[in-house]
Image (tube, rainbow, N blue to C red; front, side, top):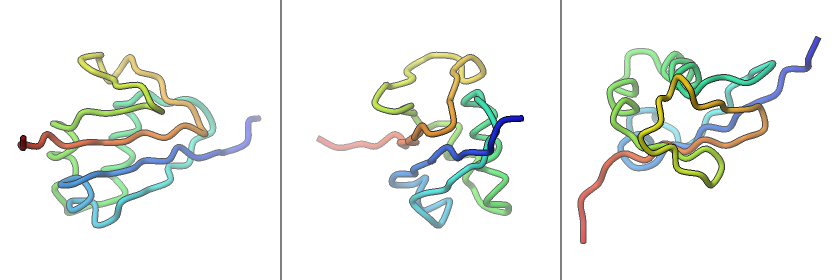
Length: 91
């Protein structure tokens, strides 16, 4: 039986506002897909717009951008950090 560890989830800009925090720690006994992690993060903040915001965010797993990869295929392991970055405008 594996020991439960955490995946650190960081929220930026609008995601931070929607979550009401800049960071969550999601317990996991093993790897999750990015989709599963996103679902767990949203479940931590019921009644918020976090799900809508995360649906349009780009994500970094560690230092690597996920890009257009299928979130159901991206593996996130305990001990890693995932950052959700909403789209933004600027120059």
